[in-house]
Amino acid sequence: MSDPSRLGKVSHFQLDILALAFRVAPSRAFFVLVSHVLANVANIAAPWFLGFLVASFGASEFRSGGGGSGIFYAVLIYVALFCANMVLRNMAIPSAEQLKIDLETNLSLRELRRSYTCSSKIRSMVNDSEVTWAMQNAGRAAASAWENFVFGPLTAFVGILAGLVMVTKTGGWITGGVFLLACLGYVLVSSPLVQRHRNRSAEFVDLDNDSHSHTVDVVAMWREAKIFGVNRWLEEHFLDLRRSLASAGIARARATRNLYLAQSVILSIAILALIYSVALSGKAGSDLVGNIVAVSGICTASIMSLQSLGFGFSAIVQAEAQWKGAIAVLESAQTESPMSSTNFSGPVRCVAGRPTWVIGPSRAGKSSLLEELLGLRGASPQLERIVNEEDVPAVTSGRVAYLPQENRLIGATVEDNIRLGRDGGETETLLERLGLTAFTQQGQRSREALKPTSSSTSGGESRRIVLLRTLLDDDAELIVLDEPTAGLDQGWSDIVWELIIEKAASTPVIVATHDPRAPRSESDPVVWVSPRK
Image (cartoon, rainbow, N blue to C red):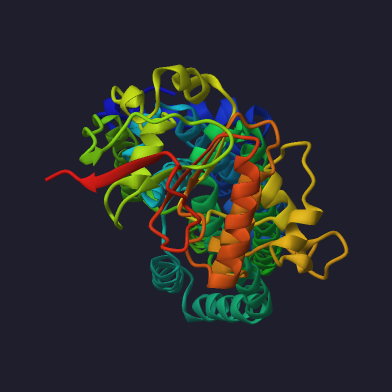
């Protein structure tokens, strides 16, 4: 797709979305477009064919009654064309919904992959929620543009009101009464189906709302994706979330299809009654022909207004604005990162045996310093001021395990949250040691999928789970821990410090903390951090 920033006209935007739809799902896009085109052809052909056949009978044949069978066959052909129009439209609804979801998923996944693979300096400058909002809105804008490009705008209120006035004027009060009865039958038949559709829609909206929170969590895993190399697994997890949403969306689309098909049957019967009421009104010749064609055309237009799915040209303009706004947020990530505003001492040796401590008050810049050290804010020109020159290769090219300050969990089991698709490592013992027995293989919550934004675990549980994720990697050449005991009481803090000291005996460990209970000895290497004045 061309760069949306260069889409100066709505027509260009429409063409780009159309091209994207055929790239994402060509057969589905072809089916939806062809179905809609054929439906509109049938809609136009119906009154024309009816008028043509009726007009072929002479006025004398009408007066003598010889044209009755001809009118009957003409009506059958008209109803067949009308039904073909409605069936083609409604049979394409599930495919149209799936195509919308495919468009959203394709664009959202593209932006998720971009957030994982872009420069660390660029990514660190963008808020996770803004990235999530932008990637989802870009997809939804494209889906909305597709939907409104395919389906034309009309409102049910205007269609019914205009239809009632014009049908009454054309066919008289009896024909107007038949039209009102048709509307009443439409409402009575539709009510239970509408309720079912609302239920399916509510289920979809609930999942869609959860999907945003889940996606925020996945997007925020960009550091873990870079450090642990698990971006493919996180992308697959994101696709699993989208599949659940797709199932709910298809259920909603099927409820929509059933609703519209039932409405089509009622309205087809109503049109048949309207045409016969005009035919039996006592008029003859060209007047009768004109009335039949007029009523059939008017009713068809009213029906189309009731079942319109589009929001019109203005909605496409809004979709383009939504798209450009989303892309602008993502493009703003290319702002240059400011230089670190932190003062720190160094360099120090970072070797196995005892932890290397990064000490300083809250908000002194310890987290920023660690992210610069790991390259998560781009290549740091001050790297050699943090660790000795001989330790630089271990930091820049070695295998690193990292514990960020935030407890980022996704909507999956604790085991999946710990592994993130990685093999190796034994979790059962550490789960038990960290008081997470309920999440072991024999525990009652072993198969429980955590809810978005860690709402199904306490802050302390979340912190211990994320710590276990970091300690799982036995092959790490360096372990970097940012406030590992944040949110933990003294008992759990003591256990966590024991684990860290044990790990430091065999692997270099850097720990940033302002915990006064940290087991720091006088001989441990320390990087002192303070805000730059």
